[in-house]
Length: 198
Image (cartoon, rainbow, N blue to C red; front, top):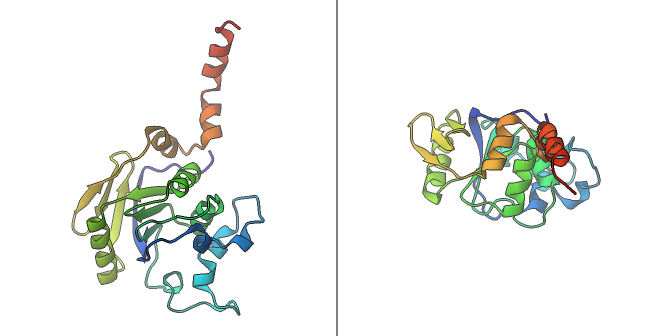
């Protein structure tokens, strides 16, 4: 499998209430030379996380031990800008399996789905509730249920549904990327080819 399958994720979350976070902020261009999906997590939000002398910026959320978890909660229009796949790789490599926002750039959303990060789009109102809950209690958990296509604030039971392409949903449930999917139906493809006249 290309990555771990995704079914239900219950986790605390890291809040990043900043709008219009673009892919250059997620992973700066100078770190795009690598071609494998490893090591990018070290430079996730690099310029926001570190000073020029590589010392951590104490006021950035990823450097704040108060917050942790496998869910990143971002502001509106998350992942805008260039189409670099590396932004999704950095999110995954850091350890996030889900990003929540009230709006995602389409290319970033698809790049996430291709590598095992679930982008969950919620209403602006529910996003505000999530941010408020996390700020009040950093131990507050979210439950993301891919089968049911729902996200729930565990402590209150407040829930909202989200949309996802059925093909991408099936791939995530199985831990497939596009190549894994084709490999899984190889016998069907071969059977079709054998029975289809030229």
